[in-house]
Length: 147
Length: 415
Image (tube, rainbow over all chains, first blue to last red; front, side):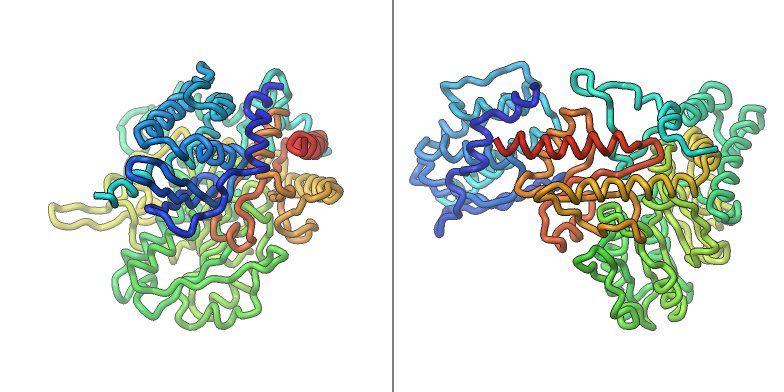
């Protein structure tokens, strides 16, 4: 079924067992993002150590796509330096805008390539990007705080 | 003639198309927008094809024909609502109609009965669509008036137990929906309109989810203003109705100003044409008004009583079918008592977006989310719901497909 392109096992696994879904007590930046078209909400904390993404934690409500996407993000970006994290995020956003023409580079995106199918469903792209936009926002704020 | 939804569905060409690899389209999203019958599509396109011209202006035959068609549509709407012709104002949609009345009240000078100030109150309900909440919220903010509201009970009904304190001597406006677009609840207007009129307040009715689905008589409803959208009543997009009682329209200041709505203009001042012109600045959406006329003529030919009965039967059928699904919770009344065909529900841990996506893969179109009534979904304690909304062209086969689809989604996401 075509729907299986969207709901890959990896996505449903992350949805059922979301990673780092518990807000850390301390953080450099905390952001709250919503998807006003569907009511999905996320709170996301970022902690940096110099240029290193030391920790990302989150809480929120949303569909399997939005929840799995942010769960995958935490696995991918924690431990990377900000430049790498930015490259991964850019690569992911590019994939989401590909309208199903690209599969995504597994070397860079790892589990996130499972979300490639989302790009064929325009209404769901925002779901997949919710956590990524929150991370982008939070990392900029965290960096600014370092001065 | 017996009501035959299958025959009616044949009037709607879109219902012939297929979805996602050849699935029959099962359209259960009429609460968002209805589909259009050929007579409406033809009326709108034929206006452009044969009569297009700016109404109320040109000194030529086309202008006469366009004006006749446009004013003819106004008469059809008036008859449909049991209103006077000059009480019917064309807008671009119900959202504009509701903003029109809210902004017009905001323009009222001291001494005008619609003038609002600190100490006055505006009453809404917790089940309002954003279109009938935010204009009042913002009017309250601009004028210093207080926004008050009726809360919603766990059963999805308005809590009227405090009606005499919610609506009091300081209340100037009571704005509420006739039928909730989320819960399907049909509100008890009589108690509310009598209390509102007792204290001298006007009642604004958001009839988007009722006018398309049941007979509407503005005189019998004892209301003062009403708004609905053409596109939810098998009519075109870009056309809506604002109705007001003649004596109130005479006193209500204009909202949008410009061409057509004036009586006399100098460089420093202007006076207004009488209603409806006072509220129709600029060249209107003529083809869409004509299309709405065709839509209401079509609905009348089928009979609003018949449509209402059909939808009530379908709603009962759907509620019974959904009641048998484990983990499914209907948000709103679970009987057809004072209830229309907008049926929202949650399904265990399956997020509405995921359920909606699965249903789409089966050709079934539903709405998911907060349905532009975010305060209501917050109150109900759910982040979002899935909504099936019914109309005259739906059949029990459509509902069987939905029920099978919901069960299929449970299997799919339970893997």
